[in-house]
Image (cartoon, rainbow, N blue to C red; front, side):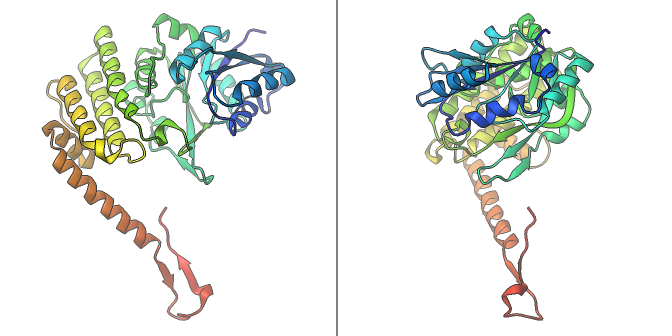
Length: 353
């Protein structure tokens, strides 16, 4: 039977998570379904025991192809290396520190056979280190209109979209090197697709806050996000994107970069001013004619970027952080029953989260 789905798993320094990821991909599949799936693990010259773990897993199970890279190339190029080796009609990039909930691959296979899309979007949950599950803020968009304008707001990652391999080849869609490699890949994927389907089912568990993860690491490399967004605009120029699309992408870009700027786990406070200035530069470079910022607080931040006013942005950010701390403190304040003021069993904790 022909391979319907190739799952590409780039691997780097994830000893504690690797087996859970690999086991989750084929869990619960029938023999027939299993024959329609191939898994390619790309050892990106991992400095730990991941390479040996992959070889051992392949020897025991016989259903894993392992590709060892001679030097570390980074997540995007490791995915590209796996894509070159793929034989499936569709490809799904799954990060090796994440995992798939039971039944996910079966649900994806069923929907691919039923609809034959260029791109299939799936839902996910964010999993914190303490085990808490959280719905992503963009997930409700998957239950809205299946239009490009709407779905562009879904988190721009590679792992929440399953793509037809010849569609990627036709449009020469590959990952660039560097951090934030998802940005110039996942956005064009949705724009170029003629047929996009949505599987309104949690098919992916995304681990957040993991030590060593890019999104939890302070580094100058977060500045690479600017070049990745420049690549998106170069691609839009190449395809002659319409004004509404440029406006939509521009809004998403500024909003994303502001999220990065405000995240202490990514940008050191001493570098925040410089990062903000870079956002303002990108704003001036790519601002669509007649652009109007969004409403509410996001729009205020966009206007401050347009003014290149870091002082006002810093004051606004500080005010919101103080308000947030006060709100959380209030939510956690013990409420004591007036009937039993000294009874420990009468103490409750109120929480709105």
